[in-house]
Length: 68
Image (cartoon, rainbow, N blue to C red):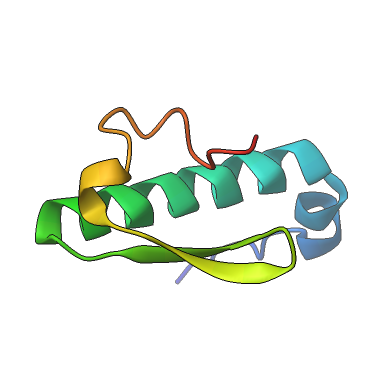
């Protein structure tokens, strides 16, 4: 029986650009899911928590976060 090789966790975490891309994609997917379900999302803006209703969430997911 052959055992699977364990991934090199240190190498994975050393690629900060890949981590950033994965996190950005996860946030966009989550925000779009909220929009499809008719749920608001909340973000931090100017030192305050701000509610963004689903109708104000961009459909493309690419322009999220709005301040980026």
